[in-house]
Image (cartoon, rainbow, N blue to C red):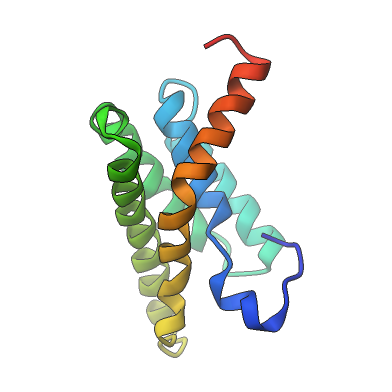
Length: 140
């Protein structure tokens, strides 16, 4: 999230915090949930210098939805999981857009939605990489 990127790639920066939160809410819904989403959102707001609580709201809602739907999503094949994750990323972006409108910020361009598509494409590889990492450090 905070690593610099070339100017041409800035619009394609994936929503890493949201993707990682979704993964852990799917895998460990009893340990990672709404409070974790809220804490990550507050940390995201502090690090990015944004409006305090803006990301906390959207990440809490995404964590709640992921927690509620985790059994269904985990039963899907990986490509269908990617579509479900894409919808969750869209929810996060819609809530962030709503907050931007509520504080009087101008409406972003269509490039605002590109990170959701990048997240859709990254999900299968991210999920497999985190599964292997989890298996290496914890017993499954």
